Amino acid sequence: QKEVEQNSGPLSVPEGAIASLNCTYSDRGSQSFFWYRQYSGKSPELIMFIYSNGDKEDGRFTAQLNKASQYVSLLIRDSQPSDSATYLCAVRSIIQGAQKLVFGQGTRLTINP
Amino acid sequence: DTEVTQTPKHLVMGMTNKKSLKCEQHMGHRAMYWYKQKAKKPPELMFVYSYEKLSINESVPSRFSPECPNSSLLNLHLHALQPEDSALYLCASSQEWTSGGANEQFFGPGTRLTVL
Image (cartoon, rainbow over all chains, first blue to last red; front, top):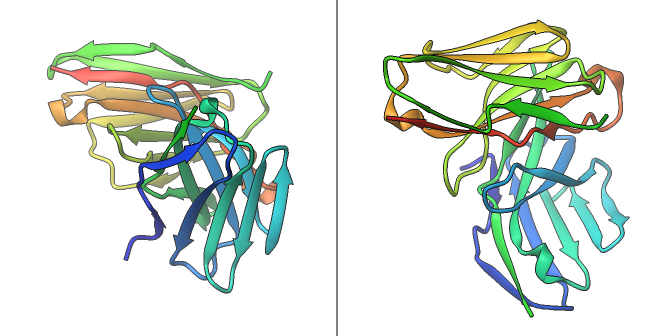
């Protein structure tokens, strides 16, 4: 079983709709979770992080965490064509006193005008 | 300054060449990272430096040699690479996790490496 799993997509959503991206993780002890957006040919850009159960909102983005189900999601409201990108879920672990991020395979999202 | 910079942007090298990738940050972060990313794959961690000391080496071949001369700089020395090492090499930095908070990692733009 992979440590962090995402549906690779592609996920196609009409403009103005809600895009829902999902991620599951295997290490029940994981505490911190990150969503990165990566445009083609560019480096990952941090969108949100979450470490408490429940929802965390930032503008059009909402991250949701359910530690009991080992599930984290990202909702994008009022989707725009500029949201078309690959979204990477990352889970942090601490190894030998240092941080390590493990990424899921990424979900490719396309917003259709 | 909330930026991580990397040079060069692109690098083409032969299998017998020696080259170096450079990364710099001025955010006061004490942890720095090298990742390798192949096309359509997620970034894979290679090395972690914490307070200028190597903390994690993800069993990377010795043809990749990291160096952290000071808290702002991170180098990756390349020697005798193989064509399969062609990838996007990403540098990232963060606060040390012991400082509390999210300690999120910020990525540089990457160096696109091609090994002929």
